Length: 175
Image (cartoon, rainbow, N blue to C red; front, side, top):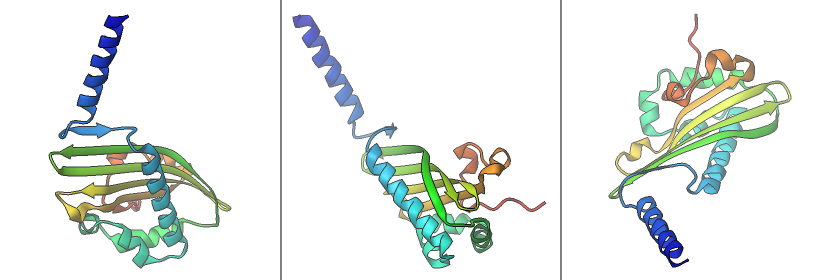
């Protein structure tokens, strides 16, 4: 019995020491509820800006870095305003990936969120990539990528987040 208690205490100490180290990277469930709420709030802001066709509000959500790297941001925003039609009937969180690192005061947090949004006219898939913290590059804090597509185009316009990590607002290439 005594050996089991010692073993559990040692195991607990190892877990605490490795999960709370001052340097390193964390991915996963830490602050999941808070991250979910923040991602949901950002989605709501994006939808309101799209429905109101509010270019200033939507642009203000993006980081300076994303705006600098984006190609034809205004044209992509106009495309998005035309694409998204109808009144929102439902929103479903379809996944959240949080990558967080804190290396001796150098913090960075990247949130990737996926949603299914249905309107009275169409079903859409949303992908948002946002840097919520970046102590080394404050110009990178904010929305970096936004992809909104019709659900029916999932096979041709939606893929892994790594491939969708493109600065600005997604607009398919014209052929």
